[in-house]
Image (cartoon, rainbow, N blue to C red; front, side, top):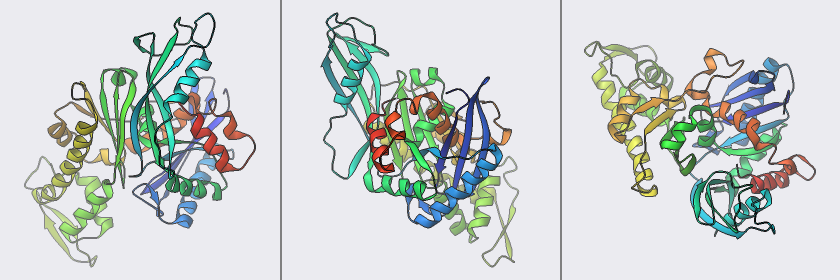
Length: 404
């Protein structure tokens, strides 16, 4: 893929971000970035087609101008409460006479693992092999070339609501773009922020966006649980607005600059504009904390409950990584440590060529991760998604083929 470009499109609740990158001589290099306000999405779901299309067009146009080249194909991030995940196992007999596992055997066993009881209104977005087992020897990462007669796979399967996915694809298509593939957003964020060692030891990634909080739990190198909570940073802005009787714009600014209210100068009050935009009142950090902390702790407890209910109790997790725009909230790491009882860090995208300092921030993790996902194999595993037929048929083929 040398000198080819790939574009990641993160259509969020508060902003749409497009990132264009090329695989140059020195590795992956970001050559274009574009952002636009997002008004047509709510909690990861399209609620206004025209507004979403406008947002996509504006973000991509800015990225194209910076990159100096047009964009046609994009890797699209999806999220929402309609996303579900499950783990499944499958087994096949090794087909070759010399009992050597081939790539065809791997494909067959992964395809077999996709055979699950799925309602007609849902479709598989990812089937991610966690590990393979060859003749009873488990924990195999790449079985190709190994000798054996029986090949098993343990797969993490992510599904989404067909209606919600189709609406996102419609917006992308009507914005004049082709979707090279769909990627569940915490997987993209994980690609940008987590180290292989962290995924091996055991890590929880929480991607806190405007309307949703995405969860991805990794262990032994692979995803074992993924989910989406329909709460994000916007609900906190709304709480501040209601609690302090101020506008949403003023509340967003307070959230951004004051965080959880844990200022060192605990007694120093600050001025807040009232709803009329003229009068002001003084608010103490303690008052702000009384609004912010309960909501943040509630969100973390919801995430922890989801994880406890779906992850084996004997699984050891080493840390929690917070990313997304919500991770910028001041004091959020301490609150997460209190709830999870684990070390917590804020995940920023890994350094890339051409990556400006402003892009090295948690709110860009998903968009940059989508580019990494595309460059690291998404396209090679989806040749049929780029040839013939209508867009939706090609995307369905891509979705059924994608297993990395």
